[in-house]
Length: 282
Image (cartoon, rainbow, N blue to C red; front, side, top):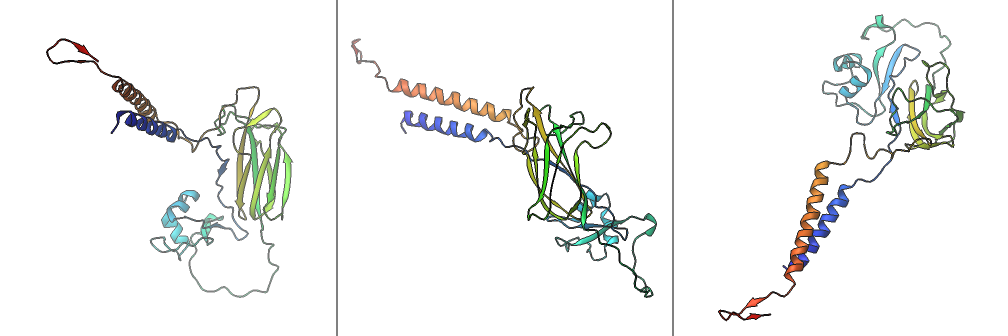
């Protein structure tokens, strides 16, 4: 193969590898915190099975063992393979003395009484707009709330919509965000407007699905324009550019340059000596 063509091909491949190594910037999503479901009117604490749930995951989320989970739900098999998305399972009782439910005789029928009003709303959706002072898109305990912003919570079908202004709570031990109470079950778009003297460090909108009895918290970050705005974190937390890949890319570029130099030298006419005559010919 022609050495010049090989050098050009090597340089193109090197540049392609370096381009693949450079990650594309992407703003991280807001942080969502899982909240344990609250007891219902009858004292039972129910959990709704989500896509990809297993007994191990459900137990870790709610602080119970797999054995306890199967004792509370006799329909779950030993291998926990019969979980169905949307299924309600029992994860605890509000009254600790109630113990594990067991089968027994049917209770004696009583005269009908007024049934309690069913609980149809979530406890709260709480939103915090914080001053992301280091620009890492994650809230540290020392990063305060930001006043003068606006938070809007809207159900995707238009069945519920509400908005509030952000403010600083004088009580430092209290939650510094804004909360929306008695929100009906459904899927919501949460959007945040930041003050004019701030720049966002993460996406300012998020879609959240809420279930009856849950309490959900969502954090949004913004950074004051008085400081140098840090670039939003790229990819997932913990990802970064590998120093090994950087060294490899540099070596590829140097190798390409050396091959290009030799290709240039090989293209120049060389001096030759005629055999034994001592006469220099070109």
